[in-house]
Length: 338
Image 1: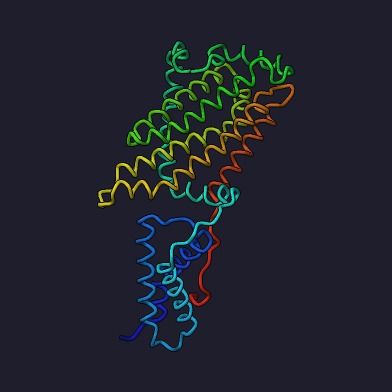
Image 2: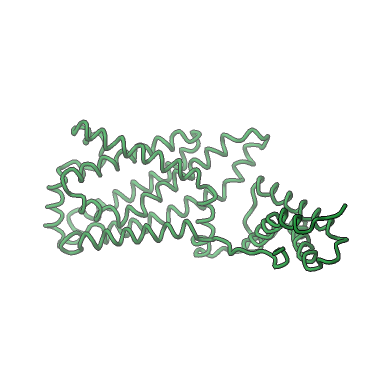
């Protein structure tokens, strides 16, 4: 059979590049275990590349391409047949800036579902408070939030020079403890097939929506943003990560009807669960620190514009970490430019 080389290369190039990316990933992070779907995909890519190499054996005018495919096949063969690697000690920084964002992106659908539950709850919480002001006592869990927002703002601004006295540390610790508990519960409630996770996110969204509406309708939007953004820009995503982990766990429990045992499904997600909840814990520690030593200081000590700007900068940095952290540099063989 006569081989149309240009058409052949154009049709198979992406397969070779994908196999190369997988092999590069394995070399960069040899301790990470591939799940069943990744193993199946890797085996398919290896088979296709091996078949392509066999078709090129008699095509002597492309030695560079043949050598490139021989290298990929040899690396793939070694990856499949070498003994199990001994895990290396992982650097905490490498884990947080490389593994954590990669797991987050791999499970992005679960994050979107968690965010949707929180958002729907926030809209309903705001609507309930708008329809009935007395719903505030039912929706808001903290005594500090039950009074008039304008009175609280006036009190906070007049007492700000007292630093961390008068309950600031106590209030901050209450919020941090609540959010850590919520994040862990969000993951644990994945055992209810995700129903409990979604309900908890929905409820916390309702609380957030009620707080936002309560302050905004009394003209305290600047105070609200200056109070919430510095720690909330990290704290709220951390809670969503807990929900994301819970939904990943729920997906493993429900299964895909592919005959895989429950034990294997749980093992396949265990690494992702620990990474997501570990990342959320790191973020909550940071948010707690900011809550205690930054968010609770208001004008005239710290201007609201400075606090809002700080919160926006945190959110941008977190978005860059989760969106770009751990991304592989594009790589492809020079022989594949046909």
